[in-house]
Length: 153
Image (cartoon, rainbow, N blue to C red; front, side, top):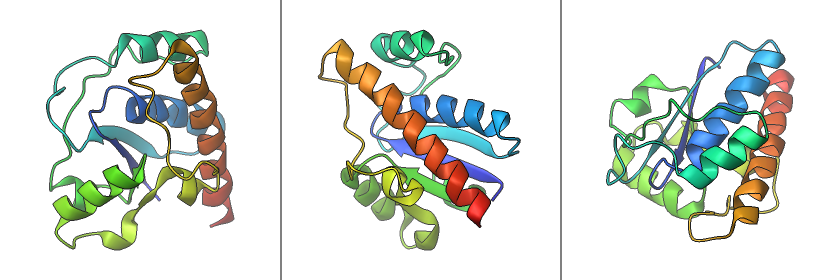
């Protein structure tokens, strides 16, 4: 496993957070795995991560300031070894966009990492500050699950 792409809806909350958390935890674990994130929708392309997510991430020691949202591209299905969707809707959108390519390398983040429940990573966008803090904790649990699964082979 050389590369993982985390996918959510707009690429301004969950997937950039999980990317930053995974990058830090992988580095600390000595895993040289490239990570990136994107959204199935393009309306936030070029924007920074949501300010509430940036604040929650920073409070926990994760850097999101340099992040710029981008939309999922067809080339991503060939480029990344694993594409992990944040929720079932993102997964369906990703599968529809892939047009049958790389289906065996697409999965739900929390399910694949063994970090569920919940099955879907809740979107904090319309929530309260506590929802963003809970997202950080869920991302950390998922990253640790990824490390465990990747080490197990």
